[in-house]
Image (cartoon, rainbow, N blue to C red):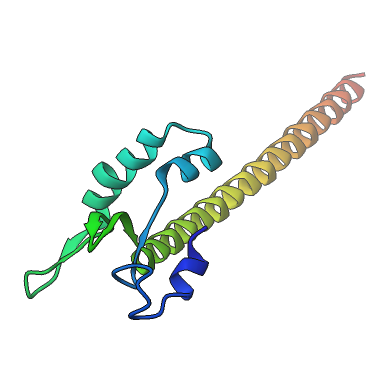
Length: 136
């Protein structure tokens, strides 16, 4: 949603204070997600900032979500956000690949068990018939 804002930044044009911190519209995002704007803000500020914001070795803070950057309010660190999203997509892909393999293994096991039980039942009948024939 904000990629064009990030890419179009030119230093000194006065559009915003920083290239990496993009001001976001919580109401617009909430409208796309069909949730309350306070949920978007709360998720960004209280959860994602705490989870992904960090302190550098020199003591400086790298915010995921900053309330104010220069004159801009409610700013997201766009490169950090894209990295976080890429990591989450990779985790989701691993989860679904593992789940698909497990489901496939379950199907193969079920088919194998069914074939084994069916063959076992068939061989028991033929052994039973052979025993009766021998007794006659």
